[in-house]
Image 1: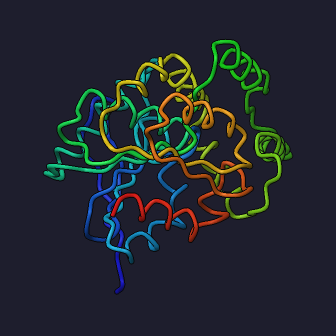
Image 2: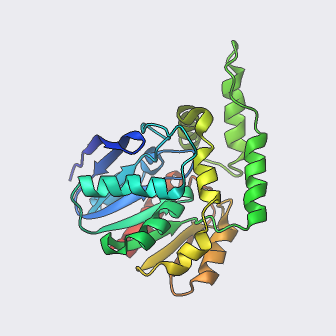
Image 3: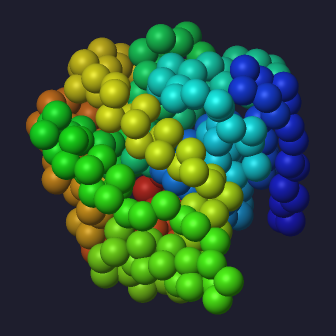
Length: 265
């Protein structure tokens, strides 16, 4: 069956919010990592749709084609934007999937609105200590601002920055897409990281009462954090894919989509 992507905008608290719907069937909200967009799931949308999953990708405010906040948001602000999409689509129950920052969003959503949540997938939840969060923020902030240069070398600098944050990368198209999303996010690309690191993810994970899977891959740069989440909630289903990076959806779309479908079904 041929599925088409339906792209839409709605008015939300930060202006225009962009999302897209791919396929029919059980609705699955998909929240991306920072600083990316709903395009990080491009390789998975058609696979999941062919299995009977309706994929609803959302550009977190400030990323992709969604308008950007003028001030630092919290994860709760992102959550409320996701709820706006759910209500706009008149969905009574949805499953949730979030990758890295997206995992923070769906964790909080599942705790504050369990009535609209069926199942939850935490893909690479960033369960980090305060020291680790501060260290990561310091590393992120060390990167010089993207200042346009006549010879275009600033674009090469951005490419190198993305490479440094993706050790072991193998997928050229994923790298290209990642750099484009960083350019789109602009100077406020830091907002998603700050919001995630300001959240008490451990408390939220402890309070999730919906069927949940922790999904990770051994090559993810925060694979260790997923193992912590597994220890914190041994009652959750835990599944890890071998190798890959934080671009795992592009690197192993069939395996990743199969893991998602087998839990959601």
